[in-house]
Picture 1 (tube, rainbow, N blue to C red):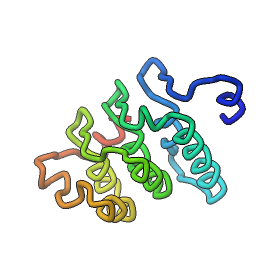
Picture 2 (tube, helix red, strand yellow):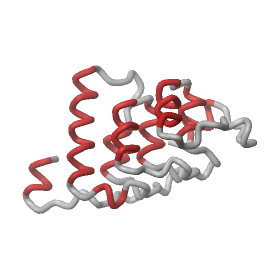
Picture 3 (cartoon, one colour):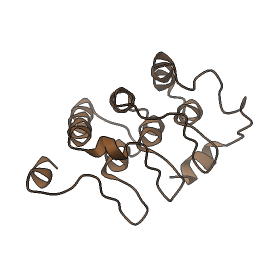
Picture 4 (tube, rainbow, N blue to C red):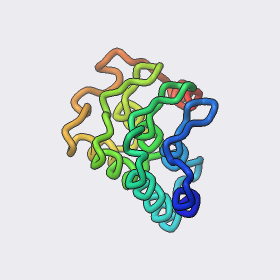
Length: 144
């Protein structure tokens, strides 16, 4: 990634589903991250944010209307959520299912991510059911 950007590549690009490099680095496949994976992903995320991707931090994809913060919250990736919040990611954005990053983290059982969102004072007072969002785990996985 670093080599591509250093040779003139742009980190503020999109694929056909409007997913940015931030979306991809924040999406963790089933099985989670090993500590080495997490460290490399965190390094890559910070590099992208420092290289201009902070300009597109709140872009939503055309699949489910997810932001990079939602992808990191769905994955339970605490370091990624922290880096995005420190770069002023907006966690009040709702995807097409009406869920915020906190709602997704709550539904996925990622309590540490919810605590981090609460620490930043954003959107953790009300869970998805209190907002009238009645999604199942199948809905969450299908929105990927």
